[in-house]
Image (tube, rainbow, N blue to C red; front, top):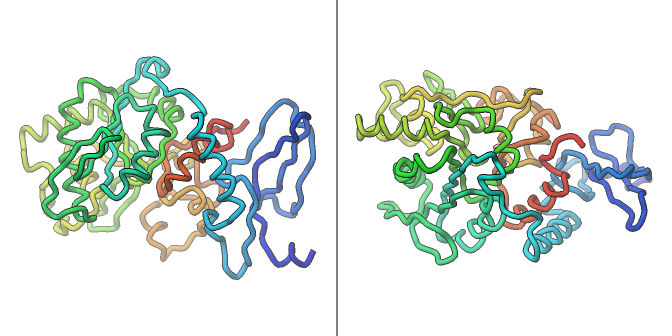
Length: 358
């Protein structure tokens, strides 16, 4: 009892007892006053909390919330999930026919140091559901379909906008072949079935642009989508960029009279560029006002406390605390390691994450 009082349990998910219809449901940290597990009938339904971790870990209250990836029990479960995924993927790759004919191209910004880890893992997890998957990098890699770019400054953060705009120009050449285009980082994870359901409500020939809405507090404010959890463009937007570029080859280099600092991150630069052609960034929330794109990572964003001085709350004006932060059918998330991607593929297939209320 003293140990329980001295530590905070953060537990979720349901364990089914093999060969029975009995389930053990662990208490969630959001279930105030409940510290134990509950034995009950599964009733033929596998139920899971909308939480990223599916085992318990403990942390002294004075240390605050630990990163679950440092918890031995959690890592063991993710490792088991990743091993299952490598042996036999949970599902076959989605085809355009599974999405009502919707064709999706994905291009991922990466670098040679991540080719054999994060980039390759995207190829074997969510990237296999793309109709075309391309990795934007500075060196070729035999296992990946790459767009190799010559970077004058080398692989640095300042080269990201250079990479992104050249990749966008190459994307324009393929605008007629696809309905939607995803720009992601090599630590992005997309739930492609959720995304297809979401995009099915929109006409790809109209100008659409989706992602996690941030507002940079410049004068005037700059609206953009955080690149980490993925950014989605319609065919109409890609063609509009192509037309604007033909008229003004300096489209991506334009210096706004009121935004003279050109050391912006690439996602800010992209937001400025698209706003110029009439495709502004705006909030993308579900019907309950929760985020569809998770910028800080699932565990962190579900636990971060409101602090007006923190950059996140200044940039994400429509963010909420706790489980209200994020949609139960979210679309994209940032800060995923290669190991976590395999685990997420498994969790989502089991309807334990990003699968809505069961």
